[in-house]
Length: 154
Image (cartoon, rainbow, N blue to C red):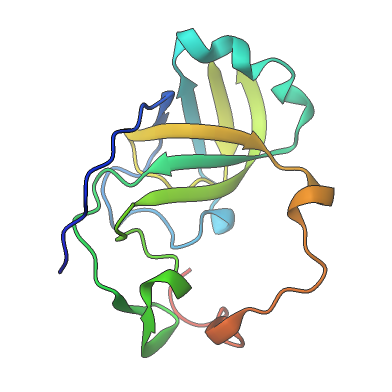
């Protein structure tokens, strides 16, 4: 297992979820009905202005419990080894998490969301609005995932 290089990032908040350890979240958050709370630190609350108008947000966070990585990995969907950068493994040289979550409500600096796969206490790095005309692609090739997503752990 290789060690990561360091990078200093400044969290803008913290994620509160029902998932208390690394094995608890589903492999893909969109399949979850769990409600999580995103606490944006008060100094950044003003940046949430108008967020209520969006049905979904893109949440970027730090896999703070991830330890090391391998460049070739097996996934829940396939027994073959695949390059790390062709997977969604949280064990990465720069362990960033990215999930499109459904925004359910905002109460001051707290966002209630559904479909987030982060564990409790995860540092929040950024939030971006999900804009269908920008984020959707009409032709997307799923690579080695083709025909495999119905198999394995959710």
